[in-house]
Length: 227
Image (cartoon, rainbow, N blue to C red):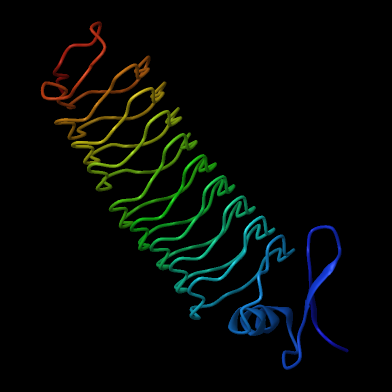
């Protein structure tokens, strides 16, 4: 019986010619240049295969396992990636705009230049991830773990950091304008040249943080917080 890949509405979008299992059918479709937009791939297992540029926009990939996979320049825009495992994955230049990555694992991944604009990143683990040139404009990072991450110069305009853990993160030069830090942990963060224009720092934990060289700090906040 031929292995097929269906979209979330039950329509067949690819019929495999060589593969016996759905996971292999995804690789076959990608090798053939097939656009898998909207594919229903719940708990898909990628392993550490080469899937550079794969097209999975609007796909259902809840609880998928991409550990160690090469996903540079992949299109995951508007995809459901809730609970997905991207441990040590290469997502350089990938498009994850408007994707749902709630409680996903992005630890130790290469996220250079990845686009997370308007993505839902609630509870995501970013530990040791490489985030140079990533875009988080208007993303939701509530309860995310960014502890100790290098976030220098990144675009966090309008981001929801409610309850997020940024302790020890390097935010020098980051654009944090209009971001919400309600209840966020900003202890011992490096904030020189970070722009807090119209940001909400209500109930944020700022002990050990240095806002002295930050820009547009709300006037009700002191520039230094003792640890």
